[in-house]
Image 1 (cartoon, one colour):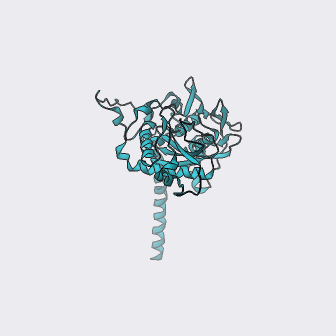
Image 2: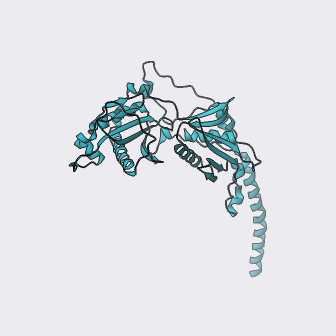
Image 3: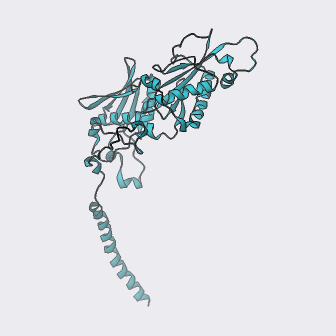
Length: 365
């Protein structure tokens, strides 16, 4: 009986070995039988645009899932070996509609809405909280309060004592409503400052002034209170025709030459521009090898995914180290910050600097 048992095992092994090999070969060849649909989007036909009746208000209609239009600058990004990452549709899908951000001594409320809708809401907020609006300019996006000292409600909002000991400085609050860096967003800023007497005109916005920690904390408190105010009245939004003249030029522009992206021009101060580029690089998932804010550069790895991913062998080894293949540089020019990209001197692969610039722009704006 023992001899017969050993014989059966040997026969079984002889049958299993060729069968296992055959299954492995069939699995590999089967991959080629499955259609590769990753490039269908390149030849997809464009659908017929939706036509609304002439009497319909176009402002009341919009896409549930917004899709950006493909421009000539994006055409060179087709067939990259992988489906392009979706752009940063921050203005349409912000996780938070009201977000307080602070950077380099500046603080603002980022709102997922256009300035024309925010202007009347900020005006109402100031009036309802005892600040009042003494002067305003929709074209400049500025409004200025009355003296805070004579309103108990406004004093409480700014943390001023109810019964001051002796004379106190006169305080005024300004609000600034301006288009945001990202598409279809608005940035609201507050600043409180002392005045010698009750102003008889709208004062210039001192955006470049150095502000103390106490002033920034006061602005944060006002912005957080405004954010809650806006949340509570989301169902009663209105639009200001007076704000139609408000500056609406984009703060981030892609400059092209013969339909080829050359540089990104940012109408921001250097600190804000650097932070926005850093955010865009992180959001795009581009590995950073080195960076230097003072010298204005990022060394990144923007090789094609086919070069960056080792394939199946990565299961048995550590992930490969990023390679310095492209440079991102920031420089000041005529009051703007100019962002450019270039292939690294040590990299001898495909020059994808224009694709890198286009991808940065998608995540910046």
